[in-house]
Image (tube, rainbow, N blue to C red):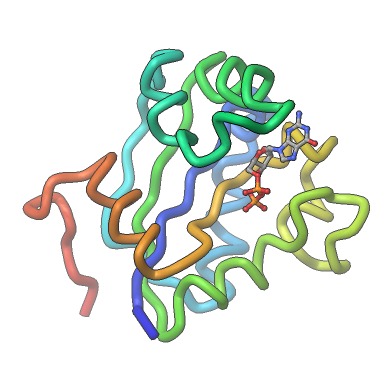
Length: 141
Ligand code: GDP
């Protein structure tokens, strides 16, 4: 059970100017911010990040969306971070997400669903390394 996960505030979150509200909800759920930046993924970087989904019918839409504007990758720390964060954001489709979750509260659709969260400890480690150097991860006492 790892204590870190990677979140991304997706381009819809930034376009809607909801970064502060979403980060407040994440902090209220007990997560500490270890690293954070704003950047814009190229299409090729989005394809690399979502390589596991390359055969899925939504791959083109997903990678176009994720490279359509700035996003905010964030490294979060909490005990059992991966599972806890997925509970905080809710199901992929906001219509199926529990009340009070980030996606239920802020997302418009299954594709444009405000936030990414890693789905396993192994993927969390890979995804954190995709965006951040070791020296950019600052433990929060
Ligand atoms: P997650 O782990 O909850 O983010 O969901 P998945 O790993 O299944 O999918 C990754 C991302 O692909 C989701 O967060 C959505 O942004 C996108 N996605 C998943 N299913 C669909 C779909 O049916 N249509 C579109 N356009 N995007 C989808």
